[in-house]
Image (cartoon, rainbow, N blue to C red; front, top):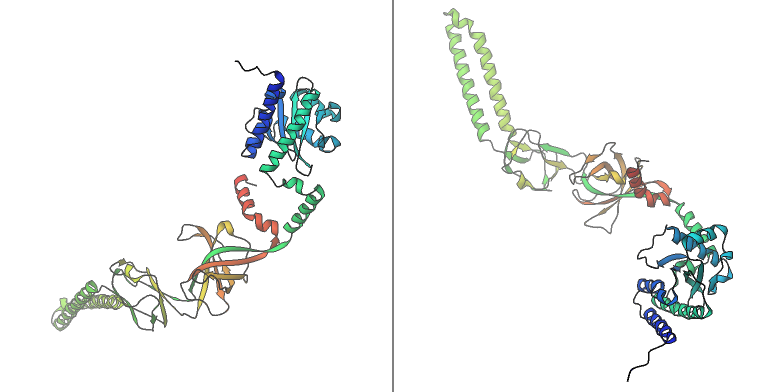
Length: 439
């Protein structure tokens, strides 16, 4: 026995129930929005369908991504804003062209179908949070309008189930939003104290820099990092093998020159040629004596001694041992532990207006909870490349109380003049915009 063929009414009801089932089973707002503007098109035969939430178009028939500045989108949002100012906004029904202004009516003729229907979407409290704009080429009959009203209730319920909270545009009235915007604007004008963060290091103040006194190889390092030293104590010994040989040769060469001078002095009484050579030989003796003294001086420099009391400040002595050094190359620094200052490397991108006497707060990496106060003394006019490869200005600050241990590193917070909060928050973005745009 064959099953009866369903009539048009049964097919219409089945399609409507399918739409309700799809709406209630939607897993996301995007899926529901796509179904609202596309799946009901075969049932109602409309040409355009647009979903608006809080006055903004969220989905369009046959369009995967909505372009906010498209002419049709702008037209739909203008129509929704016009309806929102009237009582028709909460009522489902056909939208007469007479309810719109002249500009909207002219755009309607070129952008949409002649018969438009507005289907509001309401929450559980009956407040409108959005709606559907459906337009087609033939008029809407009463049966279709009744089905649309029921379908609108289903769509509104499904949307609120996926988004229980109200959109922020509907949580507060327009007056409240304007008041909040005014308060925010006034807050951005509140003057605050500018400040920047930069890496910093505690360095010796007025320390004695110890450099290589000659070209040679370091044979032995007599002190360790941060070791207390006294004036006259040997710090570094250079390899003196070649220097001792040069001093010995210079000493013997001087002896030969002096012997030759004495021999010619004795023959000068009877030999005129020997008498004539005395001045030349005396000059040669002085030359050889100067060479001997220079060799002895170099030999004496092979031991580098401290010129003052303090501590030896350097990183690692093993990198010096066995390494050829050139004259003037830095070895270490002798500093007084009680005299230290703060050296700050302020990146060029973070530079603000600073003046001597500005407040500086240091937070050490080894003790980030305690603050050490300092005062800015100098700021370099020209930026230099740091060992990390960053272009930065050098800032020097002095500690007001007992300074931390020399060599400690941390982050310094340098305070500048007062400026509006908006400038404080947007200084970096504005600087980047200016560099990219060139204004």
